Length: 341
Image 1 (cartoon, rainbow, N blue to C red):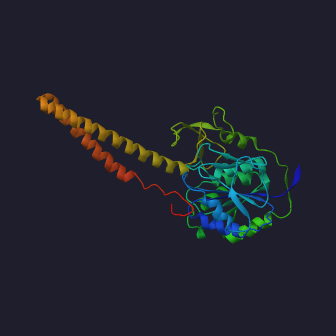
Image 2: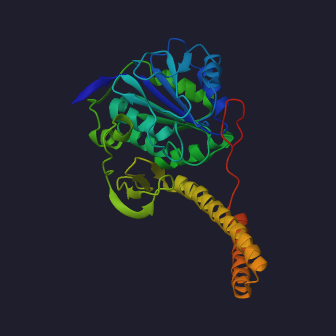
Image 3: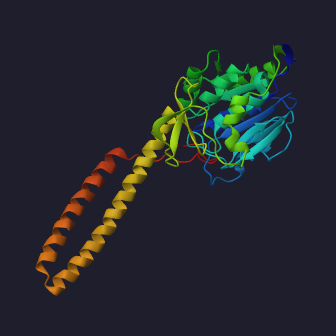
């Protein structure tokens, strides 16, 4: 049965290069906007609390760090705090220290998925500048549930990974400059529209249970894959409803294929450094044992220890060479004072 729906939930995500886009977007929204606005920016867990103040000064809307359990209010901008996911839970705001998604906390997908689950056609989803593809799956679910998606034009985005991924994941995104996206939000938040009656999406609600429940982990909806989680090394389940590949572990860490490649690169680099450290420690012990054997005149022991030391030095050199080829410089965290990534 159709119902009259007012689009009054706006979810916005950005990463590298996104602070200026967020300021422009909020600067073009009116104080009497009949919607609640939720903002996720990929920031370091150790980032300070400057972002809400920066966004509060950008325009007439009141921006502040979101508080767990506060109700949704029109004309208010809820900003995800560092190291906490920002979520919708019915008509309330939730903060969660739950598992990282696509290597991030806060991340776009948990916010977008929760908005799609609880608000359906009331949702407007916006993707701004950023790398990789966080938010793409959330945009697809928002669209599937009757909401609308807008994406910053990749040609004007300092980093076009997130915009291009969102465009590829959806069928009818509004792709434009940030000021025109602000006009689109105002237009879509005005009046009511006919849409299917809103009901909570139980499948998405189950997928989000890791953020809302402190109970024991439950297997994700999907089939067990032959892959392991880059964060916790647990088995990954493939969510079969996601055509572009989406994986989730028992703990709740979730990955797109692109973000998992990035996460695996970090895991491989960590593994190399652990192996290098252990061989260096082993060489120090072998050198000490070799010195003791030489002092005691143990010729056979000396020969055996020298052979082992030579083998370990050769292995160490090989590992360092491989690490220099496979390793990569980790992207710098995005903070309000530094948009480089």
